[in-house]
Image (tube, rainbow, N blue to C red; front, top):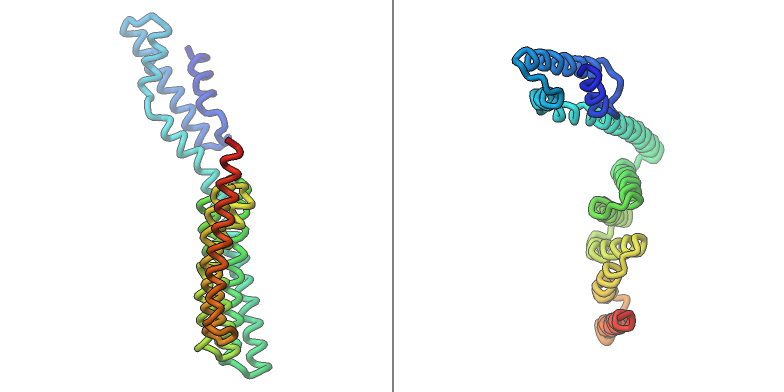
Amino acid sequence: MFKRFSEYLSKEFRGLPNSAEVTDFREELLGSLMEKSEELKAAGDTDDNSVFNKCISSINGFQDTLKVMRSKPIIKKEVAKAAKTVMYFSVYMLVLVGVFLAVSFVTGNWGKSWLIIVEGCFVGLIILQMLSAAKGLASGKIILPRLALFSSVSLATLGMFLGVSFLMGIWAKSWIIMLFLPVFILLTDIIIAAVTHKKNELFASTVVFVPIAAAMVYVSLGYLRVLSWHPYWLIVLCAVIVDAVIVTFFINAKLNKK
């Protein structure tokens, strides 16, 4: 019976690290099984299969402990990974502060040089999120990579807005950059759909993107007085026509496949 219990536990403990904690728990279970076996035999149960099954039932729930043990190496690995990321980001921030102080002391332009730290933080966060998104997409995940990329686009747009506004002092006009945030996000969605070869999502994102991008371009150029409001509203109308053409070709391609 000892050999049978030992083989059973070996299968259950397969894949676990050969640590003192795992070894002690396995020996404890084996001792409990042997003790229960002796009790059942002393009570008159001579059927080995019956004894074996009853003994295994007596340690019911030990699998939960094994699950916890299996998750510990993963948790440690993730903690180490996070600690390394924090360390690199801390060094990056120290470099940014050093550059900020150097530029500020040399130029004396403290009122604008603080942008080095702000924009540098944005760049660092964008890089981290894009790396995370790339790994997610490579492993077949979609939702979290999309959120990471959307966050990166939002940070990049905000950084562009702050940089242009402070350096050029055109707050009355630079807010238009933020107006293009939905356009940038939709463009990101189109890229993701193209990379992941999701034709339906690519079609839907493109159809939404075209008129919104055209409307934003029209409003921006009109507000900045680059173009007159009339007759350049035709830009939006042309975008709607382009959308109609895209939808027609898409539906026609679907029907041809059938």
